[in-house]
Image 1 (tube, helix red, strand yellow):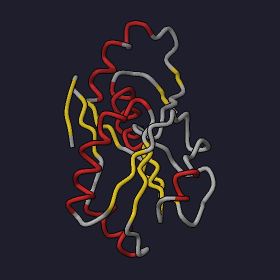
Image 2 (cartoon, rainbow, N blue to C red):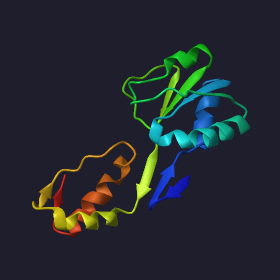
Image 3 (cartoon, rainbow, N blue to C red):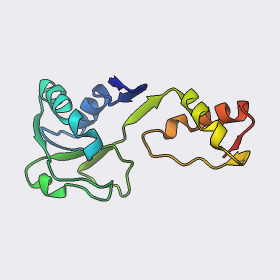
Length: 145
């Protein structure tokens, strides 16, 4: 877990270790999009400490459809961070990353909203906060869906 700019990013390792062990993985390839790449060394160290051999893909990644499948020639499994599954694959674990933030930051948007009815769209990192965002906006007279 790391923090910065009012956000908390959660990449759980214990659950991932259990899933990797459950699949009998020994050599694990890790793939991160650019926004999470700085987390690669820490995740690699945690998994290495848990007994896995680690390969980090340095190729750019533009979403869950852009898997580093070539790493599977050298690894038992690929862990793709930051995106929800597009297509299930037997040797790929998708590891969405939650990023928490204080929804009161929405107060800065309130004066800019000309309509009292808005639609909310977010990325997978914030989807768990949708209900809290809807509630906050509702408390301030904004209907959000």
